[in-house]
Image 1 (cartoon, rainbow, N blue to C red):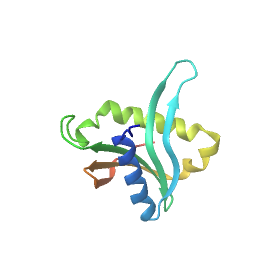
Image 2: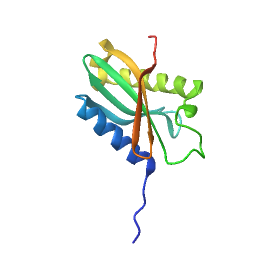
Image 3: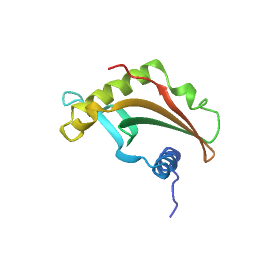
Length: 127
């Protein structure tokens, strides 16, 4: 029996624990935006966390090498647009309505060989 290693999951868990150690509270992990009229996922936010009346949308990019480019290079305008739509969907859900009054910021967490580099407020969403 062989064990498989999921690089993305490893990075997300590492970043989640880092934020928890800084006093953040986890709201959702791998929050998916789905449309009932289409099949499949339209968007996903890796981690949604709160602290001090801010909701942090955290995109985690994990790399063990640079064959796919750097984590930052993968954050495109279309990716940001999709994250924004996913966040709007998140705010529309009854269980998350409380976060409509929170300031929202988008953080980018890049994990390279277990080293975490976080860009806090890497992109601002104007609502």
